[in-house]
Figure 1 (cartoon, rainbow, N blue to C red):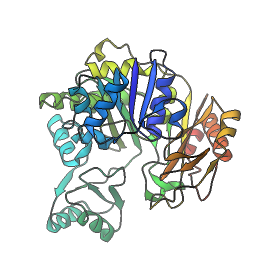
Figure 2 (cartoon, one colour):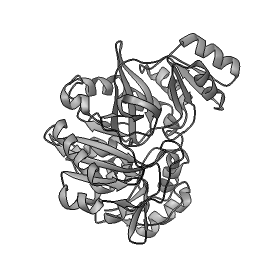
Figure 3 (cartoon, rainbow, N blue to C red):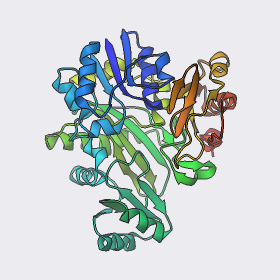
Length: 417
């Protein structure tokens, strides 16, 4: 099978790495890719938001499967264009991707499917915003209704900050604050059958101790030793399957990767948000633990034949990912800085630890930074403590001027706290 992956971040590098290790994959392409992905896949330029261009490229390459990584192409309908060209595509339709593209749409689906989530208001006027903020009180949770690359949510005790963020959005969802730890649970679905993956936890805040501004994610780990062993079964029964069933009932079946962001509250599991694609950086740790070859699972999802796929198998290893971000992230990041130490990690740490590229590009013989989150350093081990130790040992070898990373990824879970 020839596979084309669309995107150029660490999520796509993780997908390409897993696909490159799959014996069923005879050729692997990525568009547009990055400097790290170029080591495992043949890169091609493409406008990832242009469905016709993506479909044309897939046809020229003879791809038997297209995997759309990021959310923006999915919401733009790229998967529809690929399918219209007769090529199997892993990723939901434009209509089904509204589950991520519109928070209000997601709330409507959850209400119809009796999926547990936070109470919320959809607001379009200053008066509605003030009423909603007053109704819930602090901490205030304010979400831009549309796509915001993981940065459209403000959680704050400051009423002025909450109101300013709400007023800056065309349409905004204001909801009650959910207490308790957060969990990410992915599921692969063909619109009928749902195959859950292993849960992970990511770290949204920029600084240690969950301080600082929200980011796209500064690290992740899996498994979750503190989680209820029945968590996956519960989420399957109350969240994932009902959501897939409701979307099919509406005539907009969801096939691809359904991502549930969950809060484990004092009142039970609640959905914080849905995404329509693999999460970043959770994908890095989840795929590091997946033993089942990836390509056939994605192809069965694309072809509507997931019911013939046997249950997924998993390694006993734990996995930890630490994100190295550029100077000033999540503000306007500085780019073009040379990255050193990648060869040292390859020589001294692989295969237990390895580097997945996010915002990188080649400048001659040098790999340089090209985005806010630059690298995801991922490691496995017999437990979280060992995986963590290996990840940070590899991080210590990498030199990027002005870079930043959190030092406490998976620390509490590894210590049993």
